[in-house]
Image 1 (spheres, chains in turn orange, brown):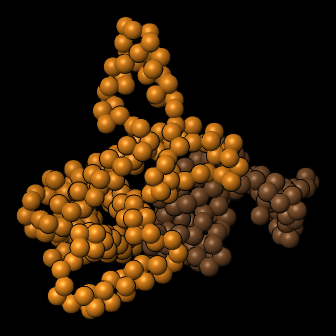
Image 2 (cartoon, rainbow over the protein chains, first blue to last red):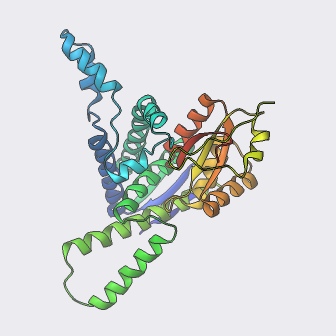
Image 3 (tube, one colour):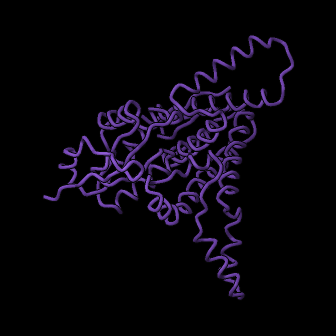
Length: 210
Length: 107
């Protein structure tokens, strides 16, 4: 059972999470990172590109140069939301994407990696998760990015949509009673539960920082 | 003083800008602005946090801007040179806020 973030006397921020909660948060962070990399065509191992750039083979060097420069337009709806067009002017938006998307993606991937590392360091059992001020900022951003992906999967488009999803879920539970749930239904319930956990955790961290 | 002529929307060719007069005091700060758009995911407290933390706005100003985003669908959160505004938009995207850059006086 999770306990909200609070500020400790030494200034650090601490919450308590059980093993399952940590595992789920680490998993959705990993899935978000995988999704970003797959959709934008970013090498999981940046070293591959660096080695190609140092290659003796001029063709490989050229490839590496283009791979680094290329900013692929996102195609997944959640990745589109994470890397939105910076202007209604398509030409300006494309130029902006070319210049900034790679850097933005690297920042988001670094945030997600840091969250996984912090959770991993906290161990597999029910434990305290402690953040310094800098990590708190990283965690806020990463939790937000994961929530954006989950919200996209729940098709939240307008203010209040989550309340509707939640209400429909509760009505569904009541109507179905003890009926066996299909797989799709179960996974939507899990997404809703994880979204709620992350929203609560993010809010609690904001309150502790205030 | 330069007058910012509102741009005609290429989609309709007929859009005029009723608030063009508001553009007059933007001139001092530069011709571009950062616009943040509403979305159903970002917590209100998070948006306020980002405005305070990144722009250094007071709580009151940050809350007003957040409410404007929430109620009107968008708010101008900074103004300046194109380079400056590009940096601000990139920062908003790093926080997961939906932001665009615009020429001042466009809206």
